[in-house]
Image (cartoon, rainbow, N blue to C red):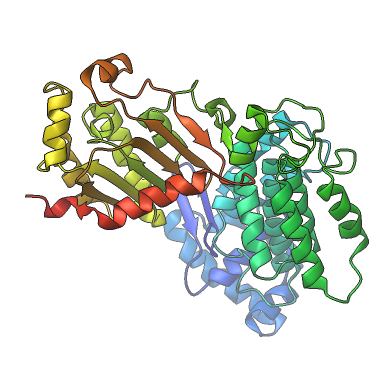
Length: 453
C-alpha cells in the first residue's frame, strides 16, 4: 500500500492524482462519513467558501473514468464518498487489523497460525501511512500509525504462540533487531518470553542481563520484574504455556544447559548441541529435497553438494527454483551453491568411485540461472565433499554425510533419501555454527562458476 490509496471496482482504478491527491485521500479514508467544508479548508489552508471549487476540480479529474459521481454533496455541510462496491487497499488494511483484534496469551496455536497469513497480507500492503499529506492534527494519521503498530505486535504474538519452531524463530529475530535499536518495555518482555518458551536458557540469561543494563539504576517496570525471573526459571504458570514446536504441550523440564548433575545422557547432549528432528521444522520425515527447500526459503538459501543436479535437471523443480530466485531478486536475497569442479581431479575420482554414474550436465543450467538472477551465485571447489549442507534463512541448518562409492550412493537414492540432521542455531552450544562456518570457509576458497573453462 503506497501512501496514495488506490480504489478499484469492476476493472476501473481510481488512484490519487498529483494535484488533488490529498483531497481524494481525505475523502477515501473517511469512506461513508461526511467531510466538512472546514476540514477541506484546513487541508488547503483556504476559506471554507473555496471547498466547492476544490471538489468541482476533483470531479473534473474523475470524469474521464466515469467516476465523477463518486463524490456526493451532503446538504450544505460537506462531501462524502460511498465505496461500498470498491476494493480500497487502505480500507482493507484497516478492516483486517481491526477484525483480528488483539492476539493475547491464551489463544490456541491453531487460531494463532490462522491469523498469521491475514496479518502478513495486510502488513505487506503498507509502505507508508495512507493519511500522509493531511494536516498534522488530522486524527487519521495517528489512527493508521496505531493500526500498523498493532498489526506488527499481533504478528509477533501470533508467531510466538503458533507452536511452530520456524515461525517462533522469525519472531525472535524480529525482537532481537528491535532490542538492538530503541527497545521499549514490550520488546524486552516478548523476547524474554520467546526465549523461555523455546527453552533457550542461555539466551534468556543474556537477555535478562541486557535488560538490567539497559535500565541501569532506574527501577524495572513491574511487568518486566514479573516476567524476567519467571523466564529465567521457565515458569510456565507465568509465561506462555510451553509447547513443542509442532504445537503439542510438554511438561516443564529443567534447562538443557544445566548438566552439572552428571546427566550426560544422549538425549540431553543432543538438546545442548541443538540436534533435532526434521519434523520439528515441518520438513517431510527425515529427508530434505530441493522442492521442500524452495517452498520454505524466504530470504537466504545456501547449498553445498556435488553438482546440484536435483535442483536444475528436473524441469518442474528448475521452474520452481527460477521463480524463487525471481522473488529473491526483488528482496535482495542471497542464494549460494557450492558444487564440485567438474574439471578437477576430485571430480575424476568421484567419477571412478561411482563407476561413471555422475554427470556435469547441471553446470550449463546453473550458469544460465546465475546470469539471469542477481540473488544467485555458484562457486566450485576442488575436493570431494564430506557433507551435503543446506542452510535456509536464519533458522534451518541441515547436513547429511555423503556416501561416495556407487553402492552406498544407489542405496541412498542418489543421496537425497539419506537422513538429514537438522541443527538448531539457537541451541545452548549450537553445532549449527560449525556447519555454517564450514560452508563459508569453503565458499571463500572456491572458484566462481563463471570462471570455469
